[in-house]
Image 1 (cartoon, helix red, strand yellow):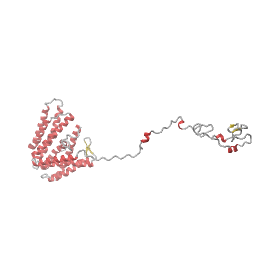
Image 2 (spheres, rainbow, N blue to C red):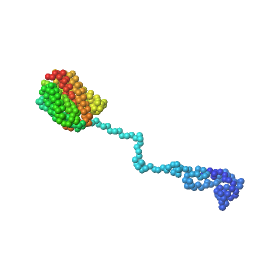
Image 3 (cartoon, rainbow, N blue to C red):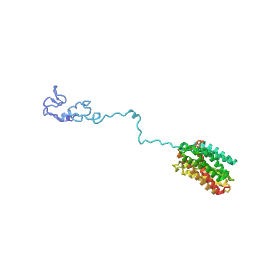
Image 4 (tube, helix red, strand yellow):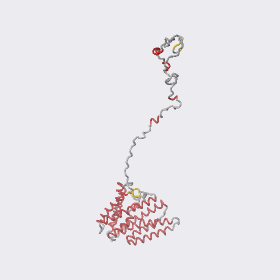
Length: 378
């Protein structure tokens, strides 16, 4: 409604109604002319004007000028609102604070085929024990074969990964001779065979071009010391009267040390021992190796070694655990430098021969020396 309809119109004379002059005379609702006109009464009796249902300007009337309210899409400063895309309605975005499903806990993995590893380990154990207690010479032959295969794996990986050509033929012949000389002639025979093997490596390499000569012969001498010379101390242990029991003690302590490190480290390991060399080894695993080896050493020295004592076994087990761990880390360092996981694939579940000799080789001279100190060379 217009606000002016509630006020008094200006005096226009006779015949002039509220909506202007009419040819029909008084129009219904027109105010009579003259002073007898009562404005309040006219306001009470005059009917309401008819308001059109559709506003002329598209909105409600705010004043007597009929100005339309500017709103909606007709307002130029406001762009028209478009409905959301159907894809957005079908795939609404998730709430930012919606709870996410918790990840499933991952089970620890041993990293190898345990069934194959156990089977191969049992088979090797049967061969070693049978040859050890039946004929000593057969066991020496088993050690020589293991040395030759280990040298083949090491020299093959050096050539494949680093281009180093350590001569295998003099290494294999000299390595086997080194083990036999240690068993037959003792430590002096082992040292002489080692020197002759190194000399043979130097001469053999001279038959090829001089490029890379120094690195090839250096790797050859290293391989001769690392594999056959250290293995010779197993043959030296075998020469004693209770030699088979000494060798068995050495093997048992090394295996028990590795088993204790693996079992305790896999179950309780949290603190890395040498993450840059072998990320899988932990301090808890080392503690397990020491504990298992010391207990096994006390039992072996008390019941297997002539004139042995349990406290000597504790020291022997401690030393074996330390040397076996260092030997394992040493070969891990070599494999990390070469960029490989295993030295070979000959033993399913274990890798290669060198992957089983890694802790045995540096432990052999330690065990031999302590047994000689405790109970003599006998």
